[in-house]
Length: 447
Image (cartoon, rainbow, N blue to C red):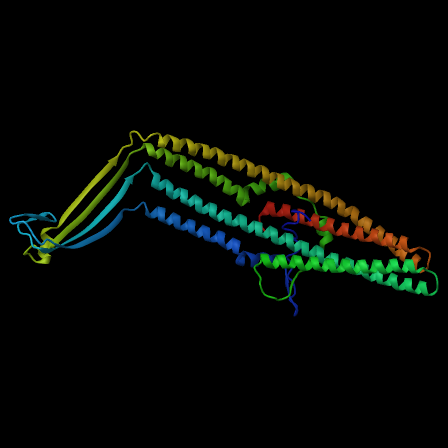
């Protein structure tokens, strides 16, 4: 079963399952809810979104002035000071110089970018869009996980029914073999024919083993996707009313596509990419605008070469300062022009990405619609074929028991019945899968 084995049984698998003493019965809803809480890949994308939130907070804080305090303390030793020399200590001139002396300074400074072509505000907007895109990436991953779970879930359902079909076929083969042994005793059948019945029974036993092995493998893959590592028996809920769901009306392509355009996270993410490129163009153009900044600070200092007390020195040497800076770009070696052109090219790339995702979305929906319509028609005809094959095989079996049909005719009838049953099962599940896939794309929720 191909990728159409996807978010299947959204409608048919929501019934609550009884919990047996041997194993918990997992519904599709149980599997999805558990995976959304525990899947490691999804949790990593959620961490990336939290990281994007931190970037938003940092860019918002960058709009505020920066404030810093500093102090420095130095001890110097001049073993041969020059007589009559002078020394600047902070902003004061010392008339004497000690061989060993100490200087200390203390300051507080503030800086604030008043205008930078609005780059700082646009950076906040850009980071907010990045946060939204991270959240949409997480939603896309969640959708992918749900699709994988549904794919495996329906593989399990199909395999469980396949196991039952093969078991029923094996029981029939055993009865035919027993009947052949009875015919052999009375001389109504040759040993060669009985050997064929025995070989057929052995093949059917192998088919049961193979079907059970496939079922266990699909369960293992689903447990891995759910991050389940215990040895507890794992089983899923088997719905009871699948035929009606395979015969329900197929949603139209146009209606599904229009709804999907508004809710699918990959489409919304591509649209945000275009918005992001608009901000990047504005930020690049800011390189042509001046930058204005304000600064202010207070400082003082002390030295051991002063006879004044430490507190007096702090007071006497205290100073305040403030100013502003203006930077006007004149020639920047075409850096700004290049940045603007590349940002515009990036916008065109994002627009093409959006168109590509829209086209892919429509193609995917159309494919599910075609699969649903085709498989629904196949299911309707397969049900008739199965009923015909069952009737034919029942008649062949009765005629074989009465020694009116040979072993070849019986085996051919049984093969025809098995093929018809398998075709009906596959068509039924593929129909349900594709219809529910269309509903998932249309509503964005599991039903």
